[in-house]
Length: 261
Image 1 (cartoon, rainbow, N blue to C red):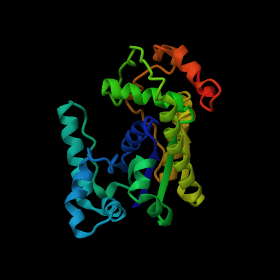
Image 2 (image 1 turned 120 degrees about the horizontal axis):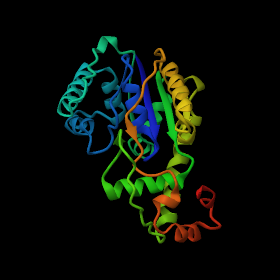
Image 3 (image 1 turned 90 degrees about the horizontal axis):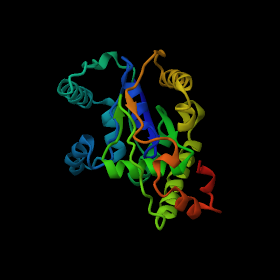
């Protein structure tokens, strides 16, 4: 069975990508596992007394039947509650299994070195060039508590940006992005795939073409799939930001000015 890891930064479309992978009958992605709100993290806490490292736990997740069928059971129950079709997969039918997490978590947990040293973990780095739009999406999520929408409209209420802290936040986001790029440069080409958000979501044809490349990279046959995840805010910053002019003045002359509409 092949292994994969979606490396990303917050608000860069990784939920969409993981959901798309899970729509393939021969692929499974467990989602995030390093955050303390996740089920895998809670499992890891109970195993730490054995001396297990995060890297060891990641390998366990890749190989474990308990992890596979536990995740399939949780997913099936969630679909039942939401009255959606169950997408249960037997472990023997799965050809690639993976997780996803943020570059900043990967570094702090020591997973980055494991990904580099591994000979069989394929890494997809999903990044977003427009850091300002990523920042606005992050602030929108904080305000609404909505991670993504499914078959719904965007959140229409304009967001007010704190211009006193925005530059520090954007610099931190740029540092996260650079960390992900640095990790990818250390991987051999056959284990590395870089997707930029702007290309992936440019239009439906680009999304379909990227999905095909992802499936081929993961070693499964490309199929037509349609994730139901949707953006939570408008892509037009003028519509999304109540104090857009103030933000423009704050970013004027900085490296982030070019990301404004």
